[in-house]
Length: 239
Image (cartoon, rainbow, N blue to C red):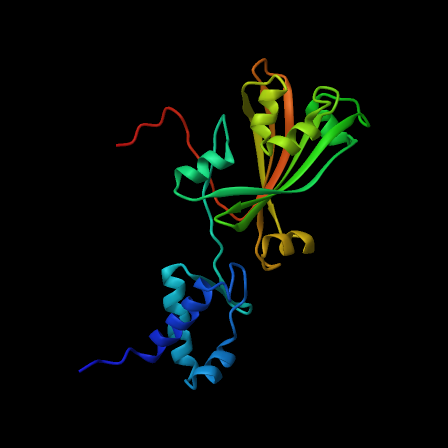
């Protein structure tokens, strides 16, 4: 004789199906406990059990006073000398992609000019991209390059669609990370919309400077997202 699954399990399965069918996407808020109890004709204790189970599975995340949300995909980002978004994501079995949001030439603001060793107001290439993993938005990045050094960057990037390949074509076969500064803040309304992110979830901000093989400033950038950052310390021996 078949044994019926507990009611809380039926609720969790239903919510998981909605997520798999993209009816609920990463960052979406789930119906409230009241709405779910009314929909499935159960008490709130049963609904809480279903949500607790989904939270334990890592499918949803709950915040007291705000409700439950579909958990976003998060790939730990390692800080290294040669950070490469696409390579890192593929190594973990996922498919990376980017979407260009802005690509233009503009006067360098004071901080950007200082990092790139330019005079404020000098032209810089500005590139803003949305990073995606398996089609889901996971982060934003802003990139600045000297326009005088790379006068054809805009045209070449539109063809290549890759910063690394564009730099290779521009005569820079390799580049490394010189420094990274990390901070956190709440997302703006635009960032929350682009990342499909609740406004109460903090973004991890990484401002960095990349240099070429001669140690000259190459790229100043800022990336934002919800992924954790992993830092490996060389010379540490595990027991």
